[in-house]
Structures are given as C-alpha cells and as structure tokens.
Length: 257
Image (cartoon, rainbow, N blue to C red; front, side, top):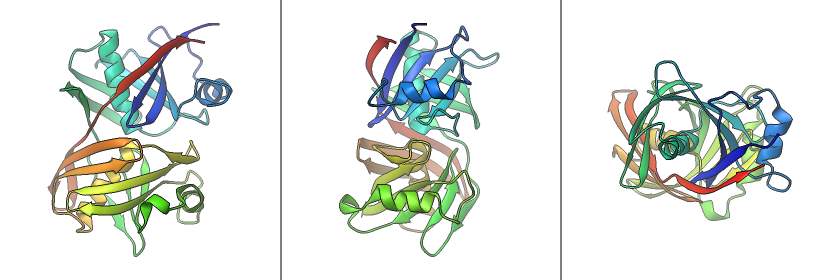
C-alpha cells in the first residue's frame, strides 16, 4: 500500500511525519517503522510521527523512535508536528495537542515554533552529572573539549550503565560558552547514536545548568550540532514552570512510499 509522507527537521533532528487522521497506518508494525526511518534502505529519520484526530484538542501526536518502538516525548518532534498541522490547515498559529506525556501548547511566530513543555519539579544532582525528566529522561554531564568528545561511545556506555534501568537514559554532554549560552551534544536512546539535536535534551540542559548554578538566566541559548535552540522558563524555588522550547521547524520534502 502506498501512502504519502512528509520529511521535517528541527535543527537537524529529522522526522518522517504521516497524516493518520483516517487511522490507515499500522502502529504495531515496528519493522515497517524502523524501515521508514532507515537511512540506507528507507526514507531516513531520527523518528516517525503520526498526526491523529483528538476529541477535545487540535490533534494528537504519536511518536516512534528510529528502532520502531513508541517512545517518550520528543521536543523537536512536537515543534515539527505543530508546523505540519499548520501546513495541513489543522491549526493556524496556535495549538493545543496531546502527546504521550500529556497536553502541550504550541505557537508559531516569526518563523519559529515554540513548544510548552511539562513542569519539572524533580532534579537529581550527582557528583559527575545531573538527572531529570523533561518528557524523556536525561543525563546531563559537563565536559571539556566538546567538539572532540566521543559522544557515541561514551554516551552508549552511560545509557546502558547500572545508573539507569533497562529503558536507559538519553545522555547530554555540555560545555559552557557564556552565562546564557551552552553547547550541547546528545546521545539518544532508540536512535542509539548521536543526533544533531534533541529538544527534550536541550530543555534538560537549560534547567540543569540553572539548577546547579552554572547560569542565573531564565532564557538560555543552546548550540547543537544542527543549529540553535532557546529554552525559557520560570523558576519557583526548585520547581520549573512555563517552560518553552523555541526554534525552527522546516518541511524538507513530501513523497510517496
């Protein structure tokens, strides 16, 4: 069966997106999803996203990792599906949609897509790293010489280490540029490799850097391998609210497979 797909990217974090409002896509076919995300034999993407109807809000987002399994929240994916919903005419410049971690608000302004993330009230600080969940679990670790760092090897070791359960964690390596500017490289579980960018990852980095005192700012710029993102937030003692992930989301091409 042939169907139409759309390829989107947000700072190099790329996705196959399908309009599944008619429920024609088999969400249990993990092999097919992995094939579509395969960069050699399929379309190629960090993940696959389905846009579906929702009873009470604008749409529902269903996200799968490149390995074919449904996954936790994807921040850049949430921004890309918002741009896709706008392209389809499902929304204009504002949206409320449901993802696996609950409801999200999003808006499109001046060519940028902003996604409101869930509140964060639990941050664990360790000697070597910080851990928090921003819709997906994230290990955040500061390092020197980030451009030369072996993200894939060391990220995989941490992702599968006894620190975390069988599901593992995403792993972010961070270097500080200025008080409100950090560089980030991320190893993503499910992709099992470094990605050009990770939305929940840079959100985790921004909050972690503020929490441990590396920055006093509440608007942080994050430099990823695929481009620049911003995270803004409000801190109420040890609780972070009104968290927004901000950046571009671009349609790359449309096709049929």
